[in-house]
Length: 337
Image (cartoon, rainbow, N blue to C red; front, side, top):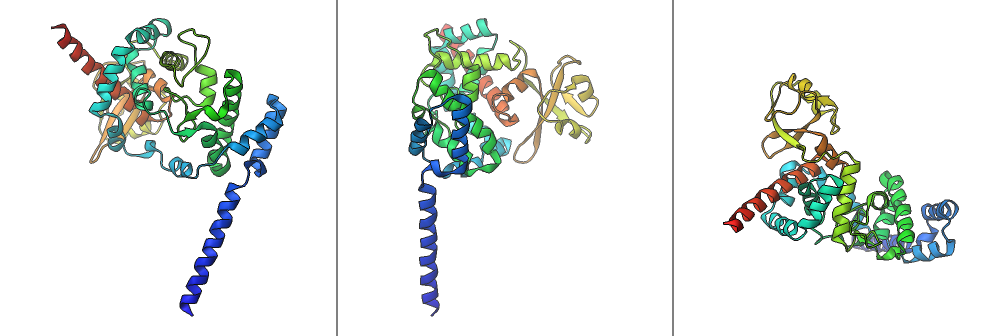
């Protein structure tokens, strides 16, 4: 009797699972969220309803994306996160990239006022200098999150709208956009809304292409940072040490540089540099295996966090860019001998 019950239970689970799979494979056009989305795109943005229905018949949700959304690398401790990016291979690739595209990077510095170093650092962290741009169709990724991840559905619904508007503007089939599990695209990993707002035609060929055009990727990263307050040849962040516990109030204030350096110093923070006492900064706490380390984030550090709202991300960009710059200098000196 016990064995019979187990067999029946297994059969029931199999039946329920098959029903769930069938339900998930039903046309997205039957999903109330997508029905409403299409209605809004037709009403507000003048899309053709039949074309959108046809598009969503082609879109596929990807369940594994939800798992990735729940386990972002930015939730890791710093010592683990850092080890993803600060590898010798990536540093070597960064030097090679900088040497190959030196003219374009100098152009970005001259025309947009953004240091080559940080552009290279962002490209290194985001896509290994264009080598890893993501394996998902962007519409699949965004639709999956809109439909199956209610906590972030509102934001990603806006991004889904933007990718369809972008496809119309650039005369590209939206199914041809590939990117990350979160819908970031191209060498620079711009979200669709950022693509539309900040991407530029840096090589003046009449087309903004962040997918296959390195020049546009370099120029667009620089344009993004410029608009978000980057200051040319200014420091990004400096090491600090702490004592007591009053400093914790500044860690809790977040990543925006709100507090004057002079005020931070009053609360047990010793800065290993000499920025202006009136310059505003944030206090950053990073977790090592057996301790914590502290940095003072300046204006340019905050500008990097506008690209990805994470102190870990900005620090990885900064440290990778420093390593690439240092190694490139050594190699250039050796070549000159």
